[in-house]
Length: 363
Ligand SMILES: [Cu+2]
Figure 1 (cartoon, protein in one colour):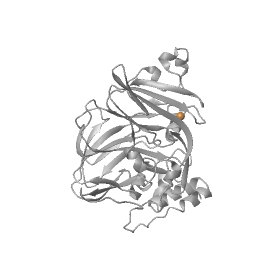
Figure 2 (cartoon, protein in one colour):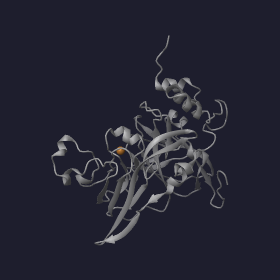
Figure 3 (cartoon, protein in one colour):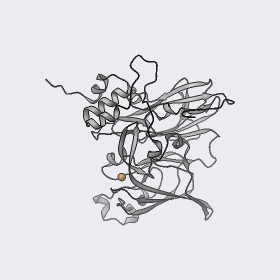
Figure 4 (spheres, protein in one colour):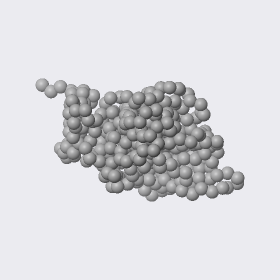
């Protein structure tokens, strides 16, 4: 007699390692091709002392972006100039359909901003004037909805029946159709870590397909010098059953296990962290062997939470983490939802003394 197996029961019932869980979820719900793809992901067995994770790496060149580079790839504008005594930053953002490799051999038919997930990390200073030139080169209508303070016409939402009869300067243009363009223009405020994402309908589909990115507004005086990095917690429903199969920071599962993030003993580390995960209600980051200060939404210069080692975020929530490592070594960071960790959301910091040369991967 067949028995209904829940999504979570299915995972728990399998071997419990990253690869086994991933393979089981895919094999049980997609097709044999996907199952064969996951054969490239092997696990080390429940009693191995090896860290769970895939063998091999995704083809980052084929993806067109590398999670290690995304950490520090801050886009301060494709064109920056002064106008009427203030700084204007212009950005070009293009929506593109693109297949992305999430873990070795597992591909996802994504929708992207500028060919990457997350989209470009747009960065500016409070009070700047921003002009975001958006072109939809994808196959579906899209928008860009920014979090921040701006007029309704720049809010990047679809037109509802109630909005349809109002002038467009009160509603904005609605969805931007394939082949069309629109320039979102507004002032950068308030300072903090924000986000942008497509707001076309159905919203959960347009978000989980990959149309989102980080939007950092620096305070007028800046923040203290630090080793800064951008981390977007995301996940992917690879078989379109409204549940995620791959979890990550910056899209590629276990990316920072394969390429541990180098930091120095004693240096200030600042992580801009946001959660855009769809389908699961909550996400989190746990830092090993250390504690951090947290700035909720980044809208204050003083921490809103001091000396914690785990932070939780729902979808759209974000904040800034600051910490220093006291001892050299390898330290894990991961979601403190064990299931997410085993399905890709786990990474490593490689902490070294300041005179050591850091070398990772294939060098
Ligand atoms: Cu969209």
